[in-house]
Length: 158
Image (cartoon, rainbow, N blue to C red; front, side):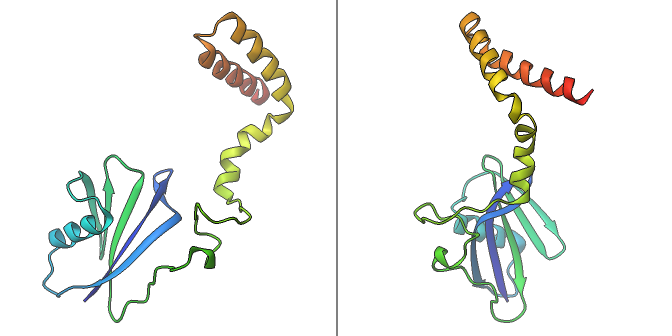
């Protein structure tokens, strides 16, 4: 039986797939779930790390306690159909730090930025008020700025 290991990052508690590593591995049919999880953790470099393992039907999910990553184990009936992209330049959706290409924006990114875009016309006022508060109380600067932003949002919503 051929097993597929798929490791990716997490955003908001869900698999994000901004980057992904895949591997197909033929193993005997008598392979237990425990040995499969151990092999997958060794492949991912997580051997010895604590992780939460959840089984969903024929998929096993492994989430390490200290990382924002997830690993899925599934099985393939025939030959492996999932291949890792050898050259990240071939796929524009795979992040590659050494690549120089135009970035793209996902709807999730726009949703995260929407709060700031809604108050962009108030940035000058916010920065001026921020500078005033910074001169008065540098220790409580972060709290003051957060309070200011929240006050403005609440005034706008009501």
